[in-house]
Length: 172
Image (cartoon, rainbow, N blue to C red):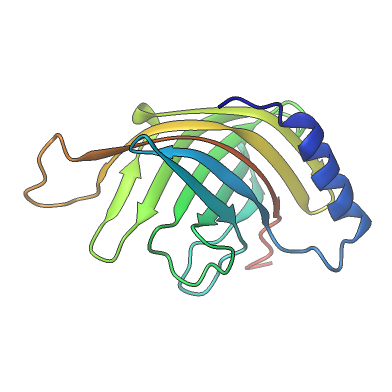
């Protein structure tokens, strides 16, 4: 399921730059498999009780979070997938560090930490407050802090993502 993401990402970023007032919301997709079953999520801005999509600049580079939901409406966190990474370098040559994937549920959260996660950042382009990213992620998720969870209780995710997220302005 490998695709060339670059041209699509460039078109998406160009459209975002052409209509900035109308497009200040995160958008994109995460497509692949969850437990070897086809899966698709829609990157949305989130907020409130929902995980948020954003990027922010820090002393060690960029922190990027994609919050993707099973429907375009993003009405609940259940079934969502959240991909988070730190990226170092210039916006056109970022290297991903410390990737993490989580999937919130009502009773627990499935989480894949850096040692169980492989993330490849294929492309990143920054225009103003917009950061467009594309890449792939493979992770083994276990239930976070669950009592009585057997070591074989895990989920695997293997997906490609492409999204445009906006600078986190909270707290400025």
